[in-house]
Amino acid sequence: MRYLIKVSLFSFIAILLTSNSSTAQSQEKGIKHEARINKMTEKLSEELDLSDTQVKEVKALFRKFGERKKALRDQFDRAERAEIKPAMEQIKEDFEKEMKTILSPEQFEQFKAMPKPGPRGQHRKHNKAAKAFHKENVYPILLAQRVKLEDKISEADKAELAELRKTLKAEKARHKAKKKGESPDPEKRQANRQKRKNDPNRQKVKALVEKYQEDIQVLMEEVKPQLEKLREAFEKEQGESSEPHPRKGKGSKSERHMTKKMARFLLMNPKGENENIPPAAVSTITDVKVYPNPSQGISQIEYTLQSSGLVTIELHDKNGNLIDTIEQSKKAAGQYKRSIDFAKYTLGVYYVILKDANGQIVSQKVVR
Image 1 (cartoon, helix red, strand yellow):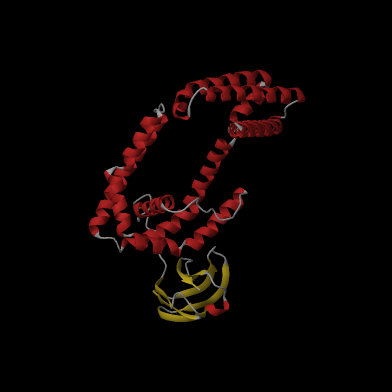
Image 2 (cartoon, helix red, strand yellow):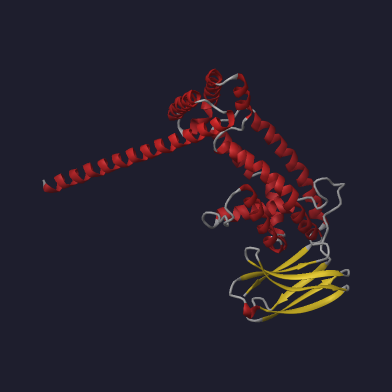
């Protein structure tokens, strides 16, 4: 009997704790929601120069339609969320109608021209800036590396890659056009995703990536410090943290991500986005070797300079930061060897960077 009483008591305590936890979580969500409303209202007030009365009315409007959206979401499971799209569109229309009654005609026009508040609007803005930065700064570097890979690819594989580029580009355009239409139900969307995953063309790309994987990895490692520097510069420009972005977890998910990166690299057209554009400049420094590697002390750097000009040799850490300038001098075309003492540097991963007169770089990863 005592045992049953104890079990009942523990069960009651567990239910009570769960209830209190749920209540606390609900309160925390409510506080965050109210803070977001205050932030959005404050932003609108700054942009539109709202009066005190308008601020109160706008804040009340955000609360009212926030509750409507929550009530609508609560009616559906996650699997049925596609069905609420028309109702959400109606809520949006009703929101704008009531907002129009609060604002003056000039203010309302300004309101409509503003980017959508919240994470989605910010995300779209960030993506647009990231794409522009990538095209101007990152793409030329990757293209130069892709040009180097072309000599290692067989003629038969080059022809297959050219065909795959056309096919996948057309498929992407069809998918994009279809996506603009009415959203399919979740089951159909999952089926389409699985269908794309098992697409024979994607399997062909995967096979080619596996075939040239070692060559691709070497070329991507060469420019890793340079790309890391560019990422830091972009994030600084956007006012974001420049800390590294490690991927969550290890294993298959990270491997899939790397496979996708290598597939995009392999599918790049070495002639550029427009085949009439000449390929990006290639470094005049070739046949770079660093040995022994890993290094216990003195290592040798060997390279060939195809045409005379300025040569700069630098040592960077794994994050792309300049550690030391080993040499900077004008040289005639020919083969060269230079020693570097790694014993004076701490244990870790380094990159030996060789720059030619045109600023084109070649790098070698070295483990100390």
